[in-house]
Image 1 (cartoon, rainbow, N blue to C red):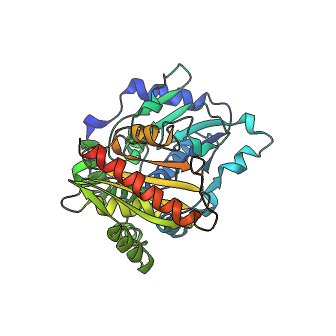
Image 2 (image 1 turned 90 degrees about the vertical axis):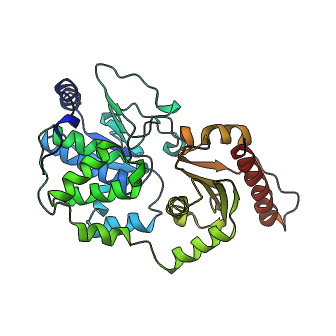
Image 3 (image 1 turned 60 degrees about the horizontal axis):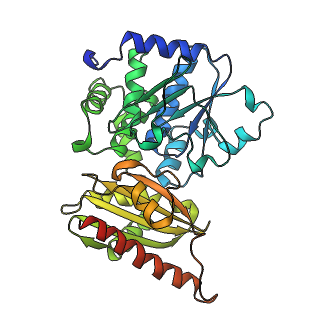
Length: 355
């Protein structure tokens, strides 16, 4: 169960990390711009690192807990009290005392942060993009490296700092869940595979609990949405686009799960899935094996600007306010909007994919 030595972080990088963490001289706000098993695992392991260096830290997240799997993880691992909405941080009178850490994202101007401006002293992220081209300074430590799951980078840091998991560890189990849900085996890097093998072969992760979490969202409602997504699907070559119509905001997180599942079928290597939520926004999720679609470019061309959490290179998500659409009638506004978007998004995506 020896962790592969060739993927430990260098002593130079580790000393820089320790220096930045210890020099914070303030409580740390760990920021998650989105919630999924990967980001949740990253946050919990980072908190454990902070505890080891006696640095106070709290976790704050954007948005709402809108995925059944996230809810299951919070309840199963008793994490409810460990995470707070970012609005609570913004409302604090002593907010200026906090230093920020950004995990599983490197977009410091993400729309999901609202008006809250961050200047992270530490960033750990696994999907470099145009929005993450920021320079590390003497007082900051940034680790933005392409791999399947951000928690693989976090486990690498954790073990490089000579911190230990124990058998049946909740942290190790959360890490395994994060890797399994955020990457497919063919998209995994040597680091993802090495971390997963270490945690499973050493029996640090509780595989039974991990499997329970993996199955948590497979209920009849999920099955109904899957059939709806399939029924609405249009395809050109290996690229598919589909919509789920109008959805409640708290269920919008299911789009990512459904897109992941559709993308795993033979003959489909890119899925663009979208829905209209009751907060008057379009939510678009892209899953791609071969990075067929540049989501940033697509949104910029068709909706005027890159918005939300759009990422470079075909994998990502975007939240687009409906301020660009003006209905011609009041009574048919919902139907008119849905019809317009179906035609617009489908034709544009399939046109791009056929080039």
